[in-house]
Image (cartoon, rainbow, N blue to C red):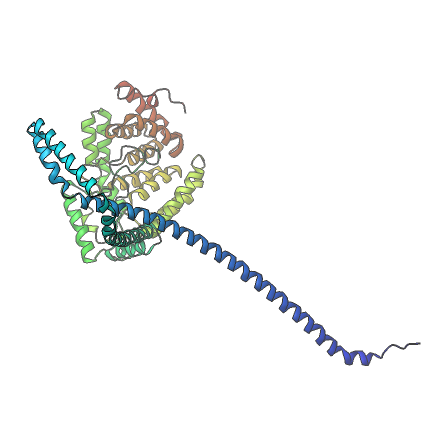
Length: 466
């Protein structure tokens, strides 16, 4: 009967067994790694060979094309060079034809043809010799043209790469441009104080398809005489570097509103008469009593903070614009106030704040900031944006002043160059931007369009299908 070995023998042999097993496992792993490495190497070699073959094929194709192009060019050049004296033989024919000596021209052509025929028949055996003589010249031309063609291709490659890099927003060129703009100061940036067209004839918020900024941004100023001072102050401030100012400096909207409210009211009163010339003149002179020139070097503008906040509020407003709950717009107003505090000279930000205040149920503040937005420096010929006049109309309507609201929309008719688009924008603004509060004033505007036959477009027809 076999006896089992004692446990002590098993324990004594266990290290040797584990060592043998581990060695076998290690050898198997090493073999597997070697096999995988060989497979990876073969795969890499296959891929490399594939790309090498592709590159060789492309290079051969290029060489064939280059050879064909160069041969054709060299043939043309040699032919032109060989025929350089042919003009001397053709010139007499041209002169005889000009002076209408047709008989002499025909005789000359016949003699020249016979001479050429006799030359080639007599010298036919020298054609091969002439071709051999031209071989060095052809080879030299081929080398010159080949290197020239390659130089042109290399230059085009570098130019294309430079254009691609310069058009990339995150490229080095864009970064250097941004650094240079910051060194000049905020007022010397490519974006002027007025971020929107001050003479736009459509409401940017009311009708996006028409565009609120239909032209280059224009600086606004307090008076026509102040325009030159305003531009001069901008240039001198940028040149001296004095535009980098303390962050605490800002414009007081209350002072701007107090200075300009009367001129806006005068324009609204003129609009009641309906004389477009007078209304346009009043709109040009509205909101210009506050002089911004003394505060140019003291206002602080942080566009990097203001613009993202403005974009955020536009996105929120787009999501809730049909909501009649005024409390939902308070968050939008708070964010927009922060944006205006960061950049108090941005017309769009100020105008949007006025619009949000209307929807938040604060028409008094909305009217103030609408006048403030219109007061920011603009060109001497600008009548103000129709967007700001529409906001003023909505603010007055929210205060219960339907007549004043209608007058504000009458101003937009007087300063608009396209009545059809103005009607379309007004309907869109009432439906989407300001809400039903502007319906009465919009219908009054349409009534004036019909009574005075300003437009017979269907967009200006009554009744309006709200």
